[in-house]
Length: 83
Image 1 (cartoon, rainbow, N blue to C red):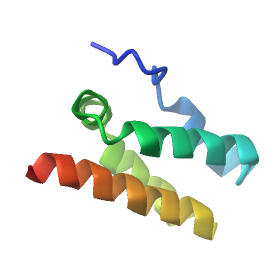
Image 2 (cartoon, rainbow, N blue to C red):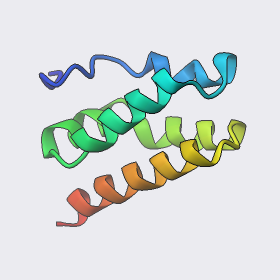
Image 3 (spheres, rainbow, N blue to C red):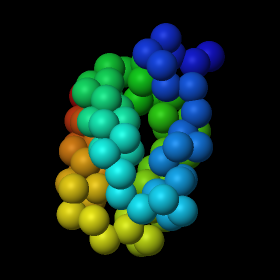
Image 4 (spheres, rainbow, N blue to C red):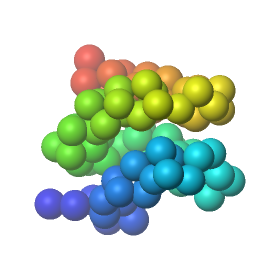
């Protein structure tokens, strides 16, 4: 079951390898960060192997804003998992 928040796949995130850092990607990550405070969204992300995807992306991208967004996402995800 996919959440009703507009997150239907994570294929755009993979394009960072091809397109590099873009304003559109930053906006998408900010939206995802905002949504990652909701349990349903976190469950969906985890079901899509988000943590493994993020780990891979962090090894190929050295854009500081990208890294910060993923740190924030990790924080929200683990915050909900540990509650």
